[in-house]
Amino acid sequence: MRFLTAGESHGPQLTVIIEGVPANLQLKAEDINKEMFKRQGGYGRGRRMKIEKDAVDIVSGVRNGYTLGSPITIVVTNDDFTHWRKIMGVAPISEEEQANMKRVITKPRPGHADLIGGMKYNHRDLRNVLERSSARETAARVAVGAVSKILLEQLGIRLYSRVVEIGGVADQSLYEVETLKDGVDQNDVRVIDESIAQQMRDKIDEAKKAGDSIGGVVQTVVDGMPVGIGSYVHYDRKLDGRIAQGVVSINAFKGVSFGEGFDAARKPGSQIQDEILYSEQEGFYRGSNHLGGLEGGMSNGMPIIVNGVMKPIPTLYKPLNSVDINTKETFKASIERSDSCAVPAASVVVEHVVAFEIAKAILEEFQANHMTQLIDQIQERRQLNQTF
Image 1 (cartoon, helix red, strand yellow):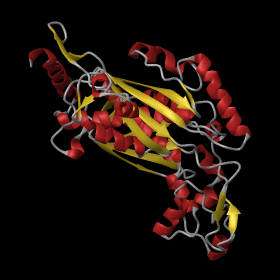
Image 2 (cartoon, rainbow, N blue to C red):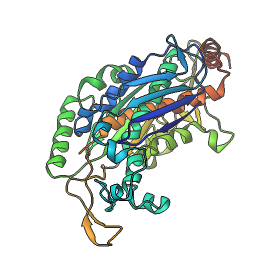
Image 3 (cartoon, rainbow, N blue to C red):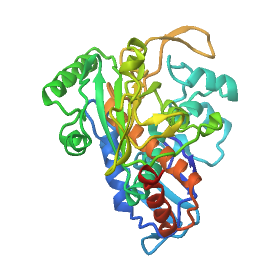
Image 4 (cartoon, rainbow, N blue to C red):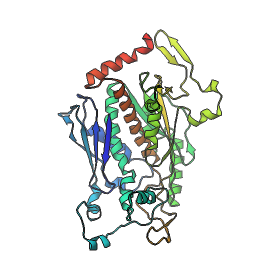
């Protein structure tokens, strides 16, 4: 299973092509749109979330509500393109039109891809960089993850995400899966403890008032994983390595950990390793889940716990110093429309990125031309705990 995305932030659309989804999976646009809607929410989002509807159109690979086994194409129309048609149009323009082009960017923003991307691709208008490097592309990745989640649900695997920390205000409690299932979407910061939620809102308001931005920590939990997905044989087949790469590839993410994560560095091994137990009813199981459901690069049957660290968004309304690439003079960096905090929305993005990596690993593990074939193999793998 693989995917490719295309499109610019203010271009006409985002396009996704997904290859490798088994045939006969029921897939409806409205189910994908439910996940797309979650990405647009969250306290601290900017004005663009009020402009874009992020509704998808499935234009290939599905017939009468079921996948065909051929590549699936999904389109997300950018409603705001109507205001950017002249600036982001595809057709050639004259030298005079080029000289009078509006919204040309020559002042790179600290923390963005602007300057380095301009150097790499020799762009003198840095809009050519920021339009593609924008986090707008995560809408396409959520669409891919939504398809992955629908597939995984058919296999008895479900994902849940939450916010753990925003701007230093943290909810470090460990919650059972049922609590995550019922409690995360009850408020606009996607944190379970409502008293902590209000503290987070206050922090976001402080940052917005100051023209600043704040980051945080998010968590995704994968429940219902069969054992042995991934591999210890080669570095590039380790499931935790693949998930980590997927998470840090998301805009603004600077760290990832599993289970107790970096806290493991401060504890003895006796408090971190998960004891192996056995019963006639369950077969092999773990007495704890400090390692986050992963051992030796493989799933061990416990819930997989993924933690991601998001830095503050670098576009600030009190911009930092930058240097104009033409005049080399110091200026305040350009301001593009942005959020003061996107951590709640980012928790949704991480959930869907993890969903893709899990689905991809499963489809590599088993023959999966059609869903019945895949479901039968997953059921057989689940019996390993009892039959090994």
